Amino acid sequence: MKPRTSGFADDIIFPGGKTKAFTTSYDDGTIHDRRFIEILNKYGIRGTFNLNSGFFGLDRTPKPDSFMKVDISVIDESEVPELYKGHEIAGHGFTHASPTGIGSAHFLYETIEDRANLERISGKMVRGYAYPFGIYSDEVKEILRLAGYHYARVVETTGKFTIPEDFFEWKGTAHHNDENVMELLADFCDNSPKRGFGFMKKLFYLWGHSYEFAFNDSWDRIEELCRYVREHDEGIWFATNIEIADYVNAFRSLEYSADGDMIYNPTAIPVSFRRGFTGSYTVNPGETIVL
View 1 (tube, rainbow, N blue to C red):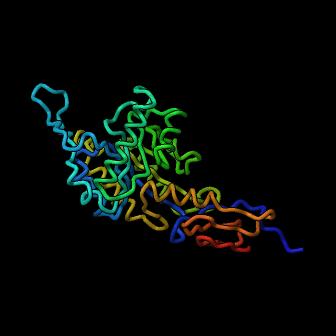
View 2 (cartoon, rainbow, N blue to C red; view 1 turned 180 degrees about the horizontal axis):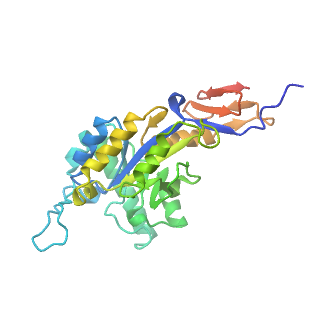
């Protein structure tokens, strides 16, 4: 009888043999996305932008007596295809209405209308979402599934590098204004095996609104963050939210024989994983491997 290896838990490896993933998620599509995307592109960082298609072109220039001193006008829809090229466009509700405050029928309209508009404007399929105001419920999650979405981000953060169990309650690692965000990033980028095994997976998820950089005069801080992660990018996969969700879901879709030694990939995505100390493996779409 051959020695058993299937008692070891299989651990995901990201594309390219990488053990870490980094992604960003930014809401509302204001004019400050222009400068922020320049910074992301400069450092080769990819992310997701959650847009309200009902607000495109909305003028929010501050009035003289307004408490808001920063222009948070929304980009015009004509900018969308080129501005967000190389990044993911996701839904954020047609008019940013509260998911639980408008009734199920209206919320379904908010999600479907926003998705249809964004797909028409961008020419890309929209499959991700960020909850307006961070509000959600089990009913809201089911409506999103029916509307064709595959994940949704909340506003709570974990301070950890874990992959979510439920992608419809995707919590970020940190908001960019968190006081310890650079400490978290340094820990994420550190490749020394401080605890456990050095090859364990990590996901760093950063979120916010680009107008906050103008409001807080913190453009230098976000550029410092992007520069740091690029300078310490060994083993990091820079991906959009949907790329990460799709890859993890493909890994979770692998099918196993009774003894765990045959593995079948029913998805269209090549999936890599590590099993104990026996090495790493890749299962291509439609392929069955025997360990």
